[in-house]
Amino acid sequence: MSDEVARDVSAYLAGELPAVESALERAVSRIEARSDVPADQAAAIRHGTTTGGKRLRPILCVTAYTACGGERADAAYDLACSLELIHAYSLMHDDLPCMDDAKLRRGRATTHREHGEGVTTRAAAILIPLAALQALHAARGLRCAEPEARRVAMLLMQAAGAGGMVGGQWVDLLGEGKALGAEELNGLHRMKTGALLAASLEIGAVTAGASDDVRTGLLNYGRAIGLAFQIADDILDATASADVLGKNPSDAELEKSTYVALYGLEEARRRADAEIARAIESLRDPGVESPELEALARFVVERGS
Ligand code: GRG
Figure (cartoon, rainbow, N blue to C red):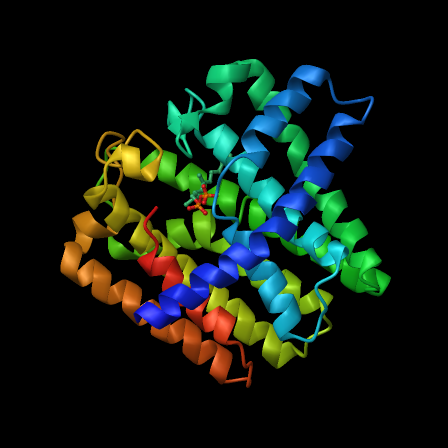
């Protein structure tokens, strides 16, 4: 990425962040105001949701939505943050002792270390249906017809579910201590990380009423950056310290298969770049013009954490 593109994408991300953070604050405040969410679980949700993070999924969603003609309204950020609620829940569960047993996330103590294991487990689970409802309400607020609004909620749940993130996490846990091949590793990450990233784009497109060609182009872009994101994650895990990454334990400590172990650093980098080229091609095929999405694709592999 040239210095100019790096500056542009940093400015773009920084420009989007306040609206994303405000939407997350609205979402968490609404949860705190609910009489059916106990205060300790609401506090754990605040911990796991509102501090830190690149907010990549909501920013991708809003960027796809605007690339398809949507406007930057509050409801667009509410829609986008339904993806971040699912992401937050997944990190809260992923860090639990029964999964990665992580001490550190985004440079802070993990949620269960501050709020307890039981409270964190329940709090994260509460986020799943709330995220689906938030997606549905926000899509309606953006004047989606009822079938499209329901489709948006369904896409979110499909990406989060057994054929998506949860399924991928399960395959990942089963694979600990084994050397997975390229097909298995790609399949795992297509589900675990790729499905939610790809859904961020598709949800933005569907809500904006994009044509099938454009929606498919954005979905393919999302799939390609999802794979590139994971390759970059493995490279960072192998080359950066826990201090820089703000998380631990490492993949090696968890005995996970990685692209770096499979291909070596240089080939892993080449493959990440190839996915970025594929992502940008997927935008150009149906004529989506979005310098922001092109720059975000490069950012995904060249980010520092
Ligand atoms: C019960 C089997 C089972 C699963 C529950 C825990 C879980 C569901 C899913 C975990 C999925 C997971 C951990 C995916 C990895 C996502 C990932 C690469 C996170 C890092 O994303 P970034 O870099 O993080 O966007 P920030 O901190 O910037 O938000």
